Image (cartoon, rainbow, N blue to C red; front, side):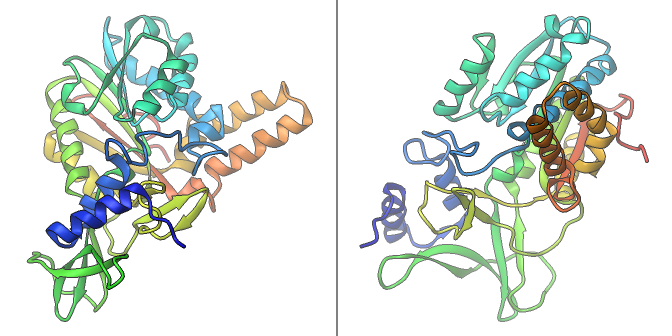
Length: 355
């Protein structure tokens, strides 16, 4: 007999009480419920988790972003104190690699104050173990202190809740989570006024107001306080219609309704809308470029060759596979995009604008 998850039982009870649930509400509960949410009580990363992010694939990824941060530090005028911020820092692997790579930049480590925006108690514990006590945690970006900042967001925006709409019978309808006759979760439609042009029957439209609100708030910060942000995520450079909401459990795709609270839910980032939200806040944006372009421009091949020369044959093969996974055209290289947002008046950051 099929056994439901504790969060599924809770969601079913909520739907019975209040009616069908919008997808953004469902997504927020699945990922962030304080007791049963996916990120609240587990380490989802690595071979023993549900997925692997770029920092866990190879140290090279974080080291190259560290080099970029060092250049950003110089562009900010090498301030005596600045915030080094990461949004959704996972295990702390990326920040650890950034700190190691920036040791060669005079004044960087002494000036950096590490701030992590992380809601998961389980992941905060892992981050503390890797980064030590000199870290300040935040539940959201609103509590970040004032001052110059370098902000990194790797696979952060894809996990923020989205809404979905479907064009059906000549009008847009909101997709919601309801119950069938057996009290199992199903996706249905509810009438919803939406100021979007008509589309082909069955067309799916995704909107991400929470994602836009975070980007706009960061843009406002950058508009009044010196700073540079780097956003790395998977998605499309231009707005497009379609269903990109997906669930991953034990390194395999599954239904978004399967085992709520035990699977990761994400959607592709619409970089056109995301960039506009940053600009609405007052920031200047560059990109997106592909992760392949970014990593190669930052010296991926040279760093991989340097590591390989010091490694034995088995390790050299691991380095080669990791490099291909990060930047291969048919792997993360073209699917993932990189965008920069910065305060007006700062120089164009490399490698944006480079051929």
